[in-house]
Image (tube, rainbow over the protein chains, first blue to last red):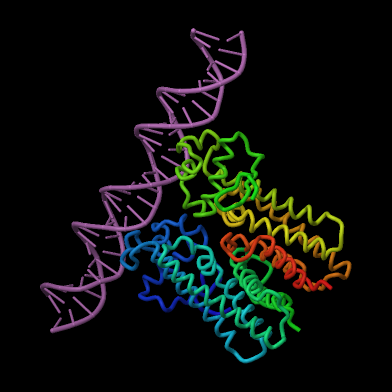
Length: 207
Length: 207
DNA sequence: GGCCGCACTAAGCGCCCGCTCACCGTCGGC
DNA sequence: GCCGACGGTGAGCGGGCGCTTAGTGCGGCC
């Protein structure tokens, strides 16, 4: 096991794009609290406490509690989109790219479960403008996966009746991992990723 | 269009097991509010207001706000389990029974979306004892689906490497419908049910 | 060494939450 | 025609919420 910093959940938390250090500690504390209890059940006092600060310290780095959620959601969606884009743009058959996309997307949802929960399930807590921004990112996520599926259909690799519906189901399957996965469970993120890649290839009728 | 009572979402709401009438109206109001905003973001004043009552009226029929969630969750899980049991116990091949289970389970999650959202996503808001009761019901849900998958494997109808993992994925796929489905979308609950039944048969490698 | 800037704290404001309680209108039984 | 039972209301309590503000300790720069 590496000596890199880990959370109680055993997840490595980079978040290195967030500076200064105090702002990053507050954001990581917020991710943990939101993932455990949900945005509305989390208090600003709880977030500050987890970060080892007084309640007022939060407002030096963030305008509101909602801005914290917005930042988390934005960074998380960027990362998720980046994972899918990397898989979609690599060389290989549509089946190889789809398997790569699903397995890495699932590994992220399982391994970075706390972040993924906040990203996928707390969207409704954002205000209209922030939500609109995130919804646009989600459409890009959908487009990446649909692109691979369409490539496979065009090349004759896949046998799919409803491309939009199947794409939705594939993403849905991956996203729901954040709901049920636990580090205490019998499977590692890598195992779930491999299993799900196989299941998805079956769903698209890969030859 | 029928003259049966419908909510704004176009869903028929039986809830006929809840009496008296005022208690049922409060419970339906709570389902709508919890589904829209989440348990923690919903106020007792909002629930009572939707039911056309004063805030204090809620406490004549329910001890706490949490008891409302518990009742909703219990009734909803009973209904979901009933749907799966009916499909699992009918006559037919494992493939027929699995397709029936998935399509009816998905139709429920899409058609009764508000209830399903509360049932599937607000579990963590329950206290320890109530949550334990519901978790036991969920294990029975899992067992019903796993039973059909095992039958199919035993009879040679299905080709499945990881029975537990695949069962989990099948249920996961169905449950996530409650997160993304909208009545404004392009698909009816029946269409999604049929699509998902096909996808699941592919996942289990049905001959 | 003196002073400025700023990250941070202690205290607390105003608000709204879940929930309670004293009271009231209505309706069936005699 | 009166009376108790009961479903319902108006007002409000105690508390915790998101957020603010006045003040403090400390590190860097001349």
